Image 1 (tube, rainbow, N blue to C red):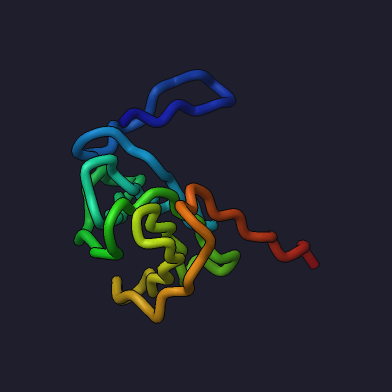
Image 2: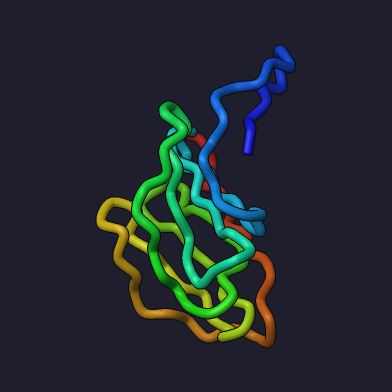
Length: 116
């Protein structure tokens, strides 16, 4: 996966991700991209500065999409085949108690907190 600077059109350092990415969630500071690959039951954080992948976090069957809380301390992942929304502590890489959703959740959207 290769990021493109939308201002200049220049490509940036390629990010090392295996397979096709289904879902992407960018941390508020722009440093970490959380990726849900098409091949898995996990998400993986990728350092946007170095391009290096971090430790996989298993969330359940068919991890699909990723959203991040406005502080960046929690990532939320939908698991399409398990009908769950799984929170992940982005500092420790541990999952919290999953929330049951409707059938086959494919997306997650979070409301940003207004600037003060």
